[in-house]
Image (tube, rainbow, N blue to C red; front, side, top):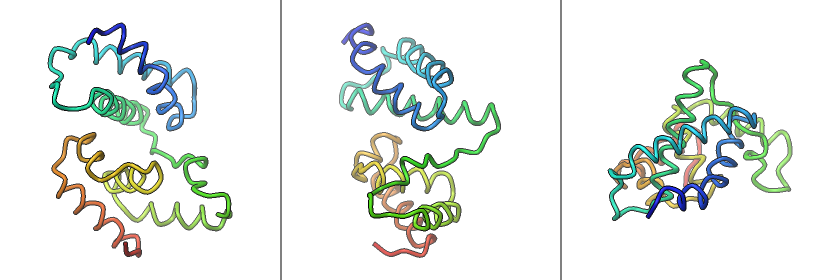
Length: 150
């Protein structure tokens, strides 16, 4: 696996994921470039037993968090992400935002990845480099804290 083919295959996917979070094309471009600089520098450390996109995605999430930390901006929920289904109205979005504000950033990320983006808990564990039981624990605690049961 060479860097050029990875860049060509995954750059757009990473860029659009980041753009959906930061909502600014220049910032998304800069962060995506940082992601692939990191991929280039660390490609020799990649363990073949995991999925390459999962590894790149984890780097992208970390670089995006770093961006927000530098700007001291709180990660805001993208309204498009909150529109889970057409039948939801603005009251539902407000309620969902309020519920998400009740939980930690770590819990929020796992809930969003699971319930909005549709990732399985095992995939999230791989992305976050966490034990599956840890991810399950965080997820179910978050649901409890938000006042919901699943």
